[in-house]
Length: 361
Image 1: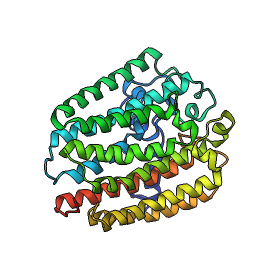
Image 2 (image 1 turned 60 degrees about the vertical axis):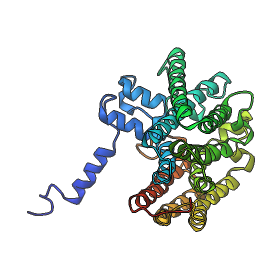
Image 3 (image 1 turned 180 degrees about the horizontal axis):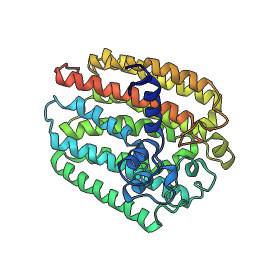
Image 4 (image 1 turned 60 degrees about the horizontal axis):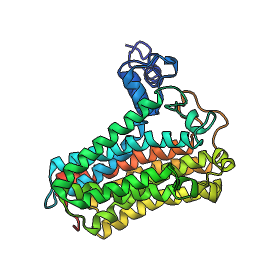
């Protein structure tokens, strides 16, 4: 059979990849759910005709949940072979931080709308449909979803309080306070250049450390050290997002850290944070806060080089074809790196757990 006759011919493979990469024509079913999970958007061709699963995946911005899942897995994998480990408590802790992230996304949209930050033409309404401004849900439905996720977290907190004590509740309370304060009055940390440090603390020590504490009942200093690299990764995504939003935030008086630094210095600072991830992984291995197999994150260095070049170049004037989250650009570049590097960090921890490679705890 000749190449042109073969169903596996390279040109046909490329056509098939394009077909699979193209947005689905329907807003119903698994392909629509997968599209929402990877883009935060419903399929463009679906219009208002989307099913309930797609709708709530978009409303909750479920596409960004892997960042929280990875944080829970880092804490959990560090905990598995430690004294006092309990599988049920680990599952409850990861469920709790995922619910908290959903609650945070919903609350941010509510608070930012109420204070007049989210308006038509602001990036939040451009890169994905806004729950309220796009009429995906009513205010009553949004409040109900916030209440449901809050109750779910309170139930988990009560169970872990009974099983592990007040330390877990302290971590959960700190996380809730910082998450709400990110956008809600009176603090509105994002507005004063404190949103980025907020994310570092929440997705690093609070989520990773809190998961470990819930799973084992104790929290050694090594786990706090080990949480820093992943917290840095998550902060780079927010830095990228806020760099994208400088033209919108600066005129409105929202002084995110990139607004304060200016676009060029903010890009350099983000590249510094990306580099610091690899440095802090190395330091954590050296002080035995992370097991040595986590050096597998070095396999993400080629991706870092691509990110480096992307951040030093201006964004395109027009979005590429099938690019769903415009005008966000640098946020997407950073997020792709987080997925790769974060996944490798989890993979290294998983290998260390399977082969019982200890660390300094």
